[in-house]
Length: 310
Image (cartoon, rainbow, N blue to C red; front, top):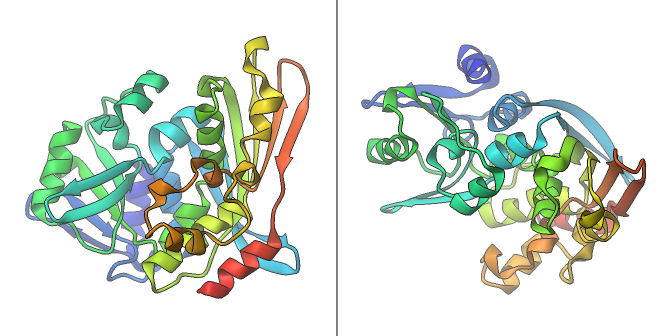
């Protein structure tokens, strides 16, 4: 809550708009009617991590390009990345839809299989959720969110950030660690064994078209993101084989901008190979054996092609 309170207190400086709905829900507009910015995006990313990680703004050199970047770190990657930040709740209430991330996901527990695997459910009396959307939710939607989370609407805080906004771009790049954690988990590694996660990814310029923006922002992780983990493995993990398959380059669809791939499947991301959505480069230090394993690499050629689409 401290991070959300800071956003509210600094709303004018951060170029965000804060309103309270008739039902008591607090809406933080970070990119629909508000301008937002990189600092607002940094704070929103920390809120999406549930306060369990730090996000800093820097710059990164990829090929001959110098771009702004986010640097993400957490000592609780399972809960911060999967339990909170993962954009896994595809919400549809009536005609309203949004992709949801943030700690309120652990209250709602809509993604039952994931939270069973994490063996975690939150019992907080307040809920913070980030809605990737270009539309402000009506009272009926926030009431439904609060009911699903088991909290009062007066204790619900919704951050609104379309993918076409600066904040939306920062939020996507800040998932670079989450992308690595999620890939390792889906490949069979117990996420509880991931002890620390760090990552860096460039921040794309905002694009007006949401489909173009989705391609460019995700390519910043797919072709420009680097993730590093300390893990504790056991003999059954076959860690070397897992790491080899965890970077985006392990996908058969790797090698062209995401926008072009999305266009080829009617912009239905579920029809793409899930392996594509890993970080460009992943490095894993195994505390048990002392080995360091690395797979993938940043790809300035495809990243530049993607940026040119916008």
